[in-house]
Image (tube, rainbow, N blue to C red):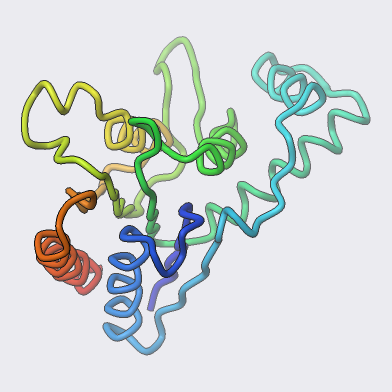
Length: 209
């Protein structure tokens, strides 16, 4: 029995290729063990606090071992609660479209909130940076209009896959599976075959968790 946190970041819902493939993953995960739990976080329905002055000042006080002001402490407590919810899972599923060669701003906002010193990573002069979210798996369902994996030239424009894999690795994830749903801006037959193949891949990953 294990818990999956599914983080959804497309506003297109039933028209979203990333969500469609992710739903196959979720169904396979639930079918694999009747005790498996799934918690969903739709970033378009979530109320996320701004990472404003009090929060960023609190972050730097944490980094420098200083005590925050009362306002900063309250702001930081809100951050720690969000991170606690994030860390309360065994496996993670992210579904996201490519926007302007990168990720949706709602997801970037969420990552800016959870990628924090002392919570999801640490630093010391002796050991350098260390991720604190360890011993867990993450699966990325990445939808993109073009075939960015088709060549080095196209891949150089892909800041969706590289960023997500890097930032999760920075926070401690070592078991990262990536499902590329591409191309989605194509004819119906090609898109249908792509979706079918990636649903099968996502299902197989979920069954092995």
